[in-house]
Image 1 (tube, rainbow, N blue to C red):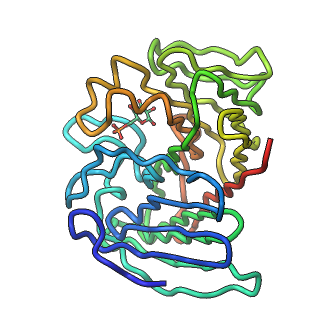
Image 2: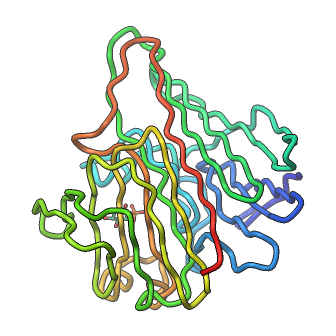
Length: 274
Ligand code: BG6
């Protein structure tokens, strides 16, 4: 476990446990890598990402808080991913995994903590406490970018029968089939779902499992061709090797906390051979 200057000179925590490696930038408390020995990286990182104060990192796991999506006059997806976080403590757990506790300073009326546990799987826990004297609402999301071999061959399961808002049309739909294929731009907020989502990736010979708790929304996103070209910090062809499956609490499922109350969003990511 050590801190080194990462891209752009931003401080980066490197974790090596028995069979896995992980890295976390303090900028955004952003997990930019997780890899089990002998396997391809689990997380996608854009080769065009910025690494600079004030800009989000493209790839890995942006921590989205306290709002999701665009907000007029404010940065997209909230301020947590643009903030510098501090490390509270690190620990080696009995099973050999490494736990890192981070904190976000200066979030008005909120105390925000993020715990990353890297071992055979990657665990992430975002805890928000209302430290103000009135009720407060917020959205949150662990906006996870996964590395896939070939998006054309990927299928996603776990969301059959779930209602979603299609962010491209603003229409409400219901997921009819057992698996979702990505063959165009997809940008959907699935609601009222606590299900584990599996990403089947025959090209890399693995299934990625995204298990969660404290989350009622799941976002599925791939920018496809035109949006990739429009995004300055994303390669034109990178959509072929990535898929976002994001766990959080968004829009109608945003969280309201009474004074002194707290809530935790937990995501556990693992993989198994196909
Ligand atoms: C996804 C949204 O979660 O994030 C997309 O559903 C958005 O609409 C994407 O394009 C990336 O957002 P940003 O702010 O990181 O470019």
